[in-house]
Amino acid sequence: MFHSRRTKFLSPVLITALLILLSTTQGVLSSAIDEGVRADLPPGGEISIVNPRGSVHIEVWEEPHVSIALAVKGEKLKRSPVSIKRTEQLLSISVSPREVGMLTRVDLTIRIPERSRATVISETGGVTIRGLPAELTIESGYGDIRADFPASGDADIQAESPGKEVTSTLTESASSSGKVLQTRLGSGGKRVRLIAKRGRIALASYGAAKTVPPPEEAQPSEQRRTPVLIGADKNRTGAGTPSTPLTDPEEIDEGDIVRVDTELVTLNVSVIDRSTNRGLKGLVQSDFNLFEDGAPQQIANFESSSAPFNLVLLIDLSLSSQDKIGLIRDAALQFVAAARPADHIGIVTFTHDAVIVSRLTSDRAALRERINAIEKPKGSTNVYDSIAFVMNEVFKEAKDSRRNAIVVMSDGLDSTMPNVPGPGSTIGYEELLSRLREFDGVLYSMWLNVETEYSGLSPLDIQPETYDLAHDQMEKFAEAGGGLFYEVDKVEDLADAYERVVADLGTVYSLSYRPTNKLRDGKWRAIRLNVARPNAVARGKRGYYAN
Image (cartoon, rainbow, N blue to C red; front, side):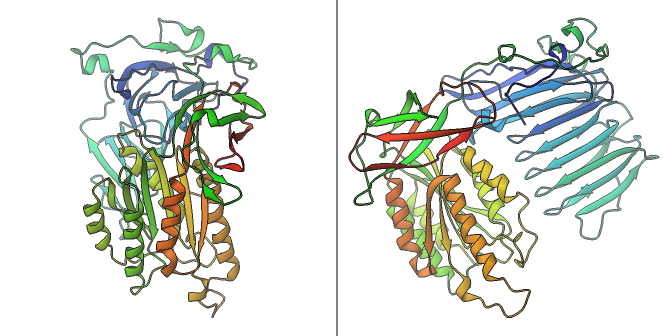
């Protein structure tokens, strides 16, 4: 992950690379940087690639150095999302999620030498590799993995896809479930491990045992910019020369790291009258005074409570019996009817997997038709994964400037909890809280109390302590997401609760600012917002970590 705090490294071989990003006239970025940076591989060949915001494409080539390029699609970025760090032991390439909004995708293309010992981690995007390095580990969260190895290569391969399947033209030795494959390519030797937690894995081979040629040879007709070397003494000749041995690390000053702009912090706050507990509408920017760690901040952007939202209704169907599904449909229809005409609405249901019933749309008739088609599925409950799915997948397709909000209805009983059946989410509770704090939007959680529908007849039944844990976690989700938490005693009360959520969203104001404290030391920054109206109280996120 990207850390811009002051870190001790040796300056000749540690670079945080800025890859210049070009915006379109609409202010939406969609550009590619071809061979923007190249770097020397450490003597041991260790390289780590982490991208939580897009895909990774790896090619094994004949050159002795590493080449890094990226393509960005989505909103305009004002600073580099990519960090490149090199020590004698490791070359690290990572995309910082804090530098990339939830609607933006960063795809990496990286060419590596055959002697590389590569670890690749991708969260939302797929991973492809062509060629066979000295050692390879790939872990993917939601994306697929595609690996093309040379036919006469030598490797011991292990591939696992717990949620989907492994297919291969290399061998027929996959397990009967199709989820695990262990095989040997050639005489074996090179270690390859592939794990796709929620995606598929496909293995294939190609032609002779040769690596991908350098791009200058593969596409001689294409005009390419000369890469910038990152390595010993930052030479522009002898790019493949092994780096000089490292001595003791020295400190890199913040001024040595290229920056385009300071981070823009966005807040979504609901303003209520303390005496009546009703929302306040009609406020203007001058009514707000913003402070970070007690220091006043200048508001850069302001959106009134009347500004439209992209609203995603996330519905847990694992808790619903067949006679309850009609009530859940009716409540969702009531939510659609209560929302403002300018709001776009999406519907996602989940049990073990999240299912997009309707993508974001303003077509109310289409929404009603799709909601009425919701049926009771079977499966366990993956609450954490489903919330992450909405943040990662649903909002990224929005091409407008509307604000984003998630309204999740669930009993909160993720299958990772004690005695809750099923494999459970792949993302952990704490990791989800961290992502919600970074989410450029607001989350409202509605906890449905289903404890009375079950009885603890055996030690394997869900116990009261687990229901309490689910309740507390749902409340924490709303707190981390800057929204409100609602307790719903029975399914019949859902429609009224949805109406309260829609009313509260009508009092949400959005503000953004550039912190005067530009030190990114990983510490907590406390935010305080004063409203120049009697009895007015602003509710929302209380701060952030300056990572």
